[in-house]
Length: 212
Image (cartoon, rainbow, N blue to C red):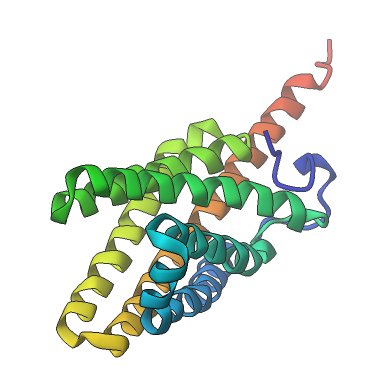
């Protein structure tokens, strides 16, 4: 368990970033990461398939999302020594998201596969964050917000890509998908850290000696 990447929240000097800041940083930061990743799809998809194969290309895109997205979201984690441990947690969460999405999609295919992938991937990511921050009671809220925001970004972006087509359509997909999922990620990090803080506060109150 990662008690808020970087250590126990009791030792953290900084407060949890506000919900507004979490949404803004998550949406903008992960949005930029998404545009970068989708640009490699728009301009180099065929090359990547030829050189890396299908599995290798998907692994490369997942790694790019982890590298760029983890850096973009790290300011939302309260502890000073946050980056290395948060990268580990985010890598696990995003890998679970990608595995759930890809697995569901390749089993069901089509629109059913996309919806199942969004649900499976978002749920796995939410569960990893809840466990990593020591906030199991927030699991359902994390899974729900990630599923809603991920689905909006993915399907709206997909519709734009289908309407516009080509390189521009793929770039538009990235411009829509990233900010929506990033906003969901910002909200999830806010909810997880606040839930963990309430657990710590409750434990502290329970541990205090009661007056006779």
